[in-house]
Image (cartoon, rainbow, N blue to C red; front, side, top):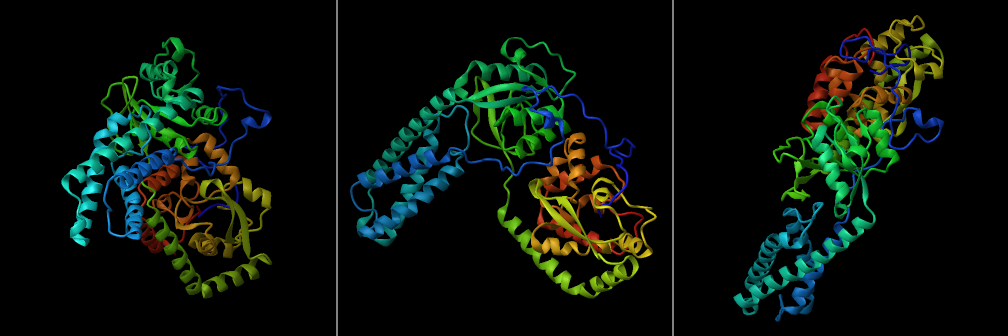
Length: 507
């Protein structure tokens, strides 16, 4: 499914533009550092988005409010000191869960404890009413009266509000002293207005370092601080600016799904660990591709909301890994006779060296050694930098048969058992081509958000061999964005139905 050697592929949609296109000049915010700054960078860094920065102080404030309320309110919550301690320990995660459900731990640019007061009061009422019901059921003689219940709710609300207010005040002071670098993403005057607001009001803690223009042809007439900021329109310039300026925040002025370019920038910032915001100058943006935190925040009058990636579904990912390991192990045992016949045929036809090993790029850009049956004799360096071996006169009839039937891919089942690969995912590529394609196709490096696979959505749609890299990247990213276990099973079924069909080339 991936090639061992030959020329660069077609990179456009059905076109013939070579993937070796010369990279454009870069207008970075800071000059390139050293002669190697212009070299293509491999895939994405193994850096996760920090989604819960700064939650610990708020959790501490909420826990202290609960503990102090339980200590001050007269009368035991449950009879017995040990039982009361256990009840208090059980109440703390309940408080955290209630506040998380209300969005009280989500990031805010302008947090206010007074605006959080209604949510705090409601959750305190739920907590103490539940506690009173449990006490009444277990020990009717120790039931909380209405006056005591109202006192507990009011006291916890006041203490939580005071503690959160102190946390927010300390954060604002820290943000003014040590602001984080930010890029404003969007076209025209809207992005300039948001950048000017950030520049003029440091209490938000974001220092704009550039404008990522999603409409390069737009007018460039902003003045003031926004007009002095570098305007970046090339995808590679934006990526380099993120790295050189340690950008931690990206403020979008249009929804992520507004156009394909904006969506690709969302993936770029997410892969580099940036926090994403939507600051809508018109106040009418509707987001469908990501979760939008409520209630809404504001940035100097602009409605602003954090954009939160869809849940990672860790249980389903664990199930995917378990299914991969189990099915791959079973397939290895069941296919052992076929593997033995293929190995013997390669040995008799092409001599020693049955297994072909090659470095490929996997999850988050990490390299691994991919295994295949050898289908021709090739120089190691040549096989790492040439694209396809279709029609190569060094390929024996046995090698041609293995490639057309995809039987040469069977050793990759061991890669799946090892955890290097998955059964379904974007096909892994060699570091040389990953660097090349990442510099030419904006969405290519985002393919490495998911474990690479033996087969994938692009392959079952015929994108194998010397086909469009742009189309492959689009199919791979669509698979990742819409991933589900059912989709994996569907792709495996489609692959199994066509596995033994002869093909004119590998993928």
